[in-house]
Image (cartoon, rainbow, N blue to C red):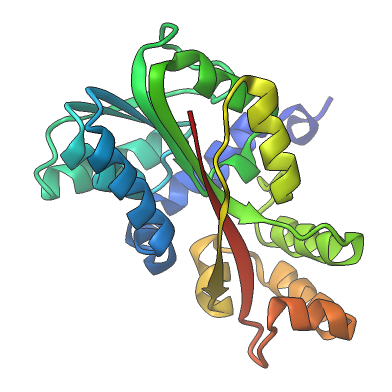
Length: 256
């Protein structure tokens, strides 16, 4: 077995995001948005004693939830990402954020140990999304709240195939963007009671989107070639622009 074939998905995710931690902390797409405000507003209403940012990435959920919690754990596969988050937390004077390294499929915390669990723009990287959501449910205390936000794919297979293709070309740690119906099924199977999903449009500047992940030029050209060959209904769905910029749909869903 070669070193490449022996590489696990978790190692692939860490390798992809570790060197780009700073770019995600400063990413305009990740640092703002109505979905982030929705998560912060829910935390402000709950005032949790202990909160968990599951797959924290650049830490933007952590930064918005921490002011409303007594303690917040920023949890991620990438140690480099956690280092960048803690550096920014110190700059923001958020002393109640604690970093924890690990996989979402096996969270190293006791049952019912959090009162608020949030995850944003992370689940499409999870090796086993069902296991990750079950773990979120396991560590959530009775009466606690969870909120998940991520890019979603529409049901038509034609559009879905193009979305997964460009996502994977841009970032080899991508697993899948799921449909809203799949998300609701995952949450119910884990034992959550999901609320109504909120859908929003997210515009992605092509140059910034590929630069943030340091996508190799060969893959950038492949994405542009796929965009050029998209059927009209697919290009219309993405609101494809001449420079390759496009629009996706995100979903935020609260559960308890």
